[in-house]
Amino acid sequence: MSGCHCDDTATNLSRAQDAARRRVLWTVLTINTALFVGEFTAGWWADSSALQADSLDALGDAGIYALSLAVVGGSLRQRNGAAVLKGLLQGAFGLLVLAEVVRRVVAGAEPLAPLMAAVAAIALLANLACFMLLMRHRGDDLNMRSVWLCSRNDVASNAGVILAAGAVALTGSVWPDAVVGALVALLFLHTSWQVLREAWPGWRHAVVHDLGKVKP
Image (cartoon, rainbow, N blue to C red):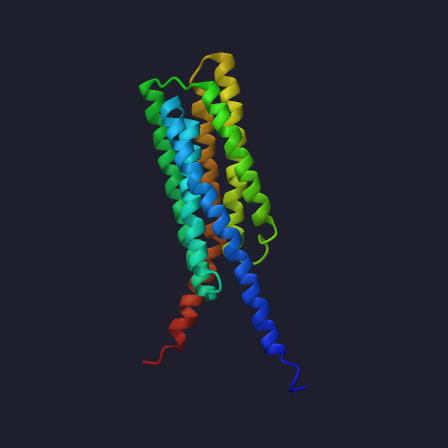
């Protein structure tokens, strides 16, 4: 049936889906940028490794969401390439957080538990909102799945900081803060490996496929 306009319907549906993804990504990008500024400042003031680790996670996520926005509606190669870069960024942030945890333990930092808990609770509410917004798109493609994984990490990280604040208040020790900071770093590294394991083969296959189409 030549007059069914099936191609037009599919194109319009695809555009509508891309527009919905962009709206969600812009929303979570804005939230995470604000969280980074607030958490980093509070983490510096409270002398908290866990809180600053969480702020760096928010910064990394803001960059990841911006990268995801750039490739919405792009080719499979572009989306897999963006996912590879996001995996590498998560790994870099994990190593950076581990280095910061070691530095604070050696320097003998004394975290301010009440401020840690208050800021982490605010961040938890914000990241739960991001998590719910991204959940409906987690199965769209690897690009959206990778940002949903980042949001899941945020929720776990915020909960960890709240637990660390309680443990610091009860024990008067820096170690609960350091342990949670290290666990957040390991979570980054695990997500990095998980995303790269899925994205790297697809990106390489797409590159080889594109090169094969280039005529000498």
